[in-house]
Image (cartoon, rainbow, N blue to C red):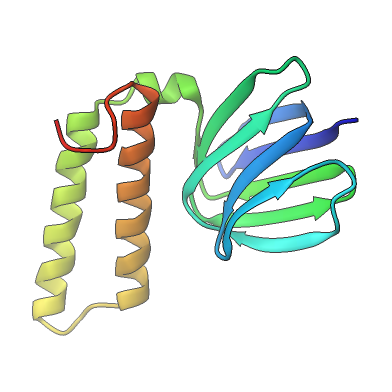
Length: 146
């Protein structure tokens, strides 16, 4: 038995197909979805979505913030943005790491002036650091600094 999975970003459709199991990062933690799952609505947390396909392969995607809707036979993941495995190989991990450092400095500067929206700052840092970890894992670089 399979479940239909649709992953879309604000820019384009990312994946549409059948799966035997889907692992999704949510605000409440990682959620595993199988066919006939209870109806669920949840907020996405930046992280990896793993789609276990009927042929035994696992497709991996990275999603930013967004919404997850689960129906008994359909999983809909609507993300602000998403990356495919191919995208990960086209991203320079060192460049991402440099951007993460810039964002940390930007947040620090605003914090020093008392002009920081902590929720937005936390979201920026979570998304950037999770994206970097995912790109490194996809490229076989591990999660640490190299």
